[in-house]
Image 1 (cartoon, helix red, strand yellow):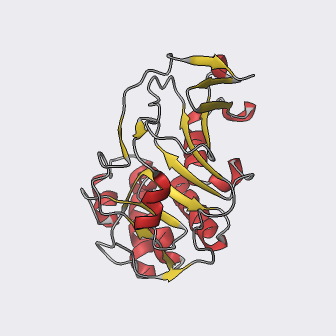
Image 2 (image 1 turned 90 degrees about the horizontal axis):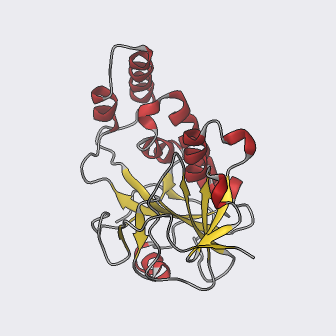
Image 3 (image 1 turned 180 degrees about the vertical axis):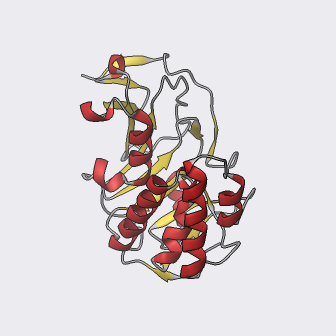
Length: 243
C-alpha cells in the first residue's frame, strides 16, 4: 500500500549503513517491552528523563539521557526525538521508531523488505480516521487553540490539500536518514505540530503532500501483528549497569 506522490532520493536501504531501533520514555513511563526478536547488528536505544537509568541497560535497551535543557520539557523532547531521528541519532543511517509501549515480536528487516517497496519511510495507516479536516474540527474548543485550528483548516484548503487524504499511525516508523526529501517532510511535520497541537500525530499527511513525498504503508493491523504488539514489561526489571 503506497501513497501516491514522488519518491525521495534514497531507497531505504537496510543492506548497507548502520541501523537503530529507538524510543523515548519520559514522564515516569513505567512500561518498556523487551523485544522478543533482536537483530544483533542493530542498536536499541531508549531516551529517558530519569537520571537513575543513565548508563544502564534493560535487556537490549541502552538508556540515554535527554539533554539537560530538555529535562524541563520532556513532552517536547519526546516528539522531537520521535519526529527528527537524524538530529538525535546522527551516527545512524536509518532508524525504526517504536512508541514506548510497543513490543517488537518479529524480524523488522523482513517487515521492511516485504512492505517498504524501496521507500525511505514505512509506517502503518490510521484506520480509525483518514481526514485531517475532521481532526481539526473535533479538536476545536473555545480557547486560543480554536483560532489556530480554524486558521490551519483555512490554510490547507487554500493550498489545495484534499479531504480524506489519509493519515498514519505513528507508533512505529522506519526512516532512512540519507533521504534529504524525507528530512524536509519531517521538518515540516515538526513545524506544523508546534503551530497546532492537534497536528502532533496527523501533521505528517500534510507535510508529505506538501513535499510530494511518496511513502510506504503496511496494511497489517498496527496494534497486533507478526512484527509488533503492545507490551507490558516493567521498566524497573532487569536493569544492569552498562559497563
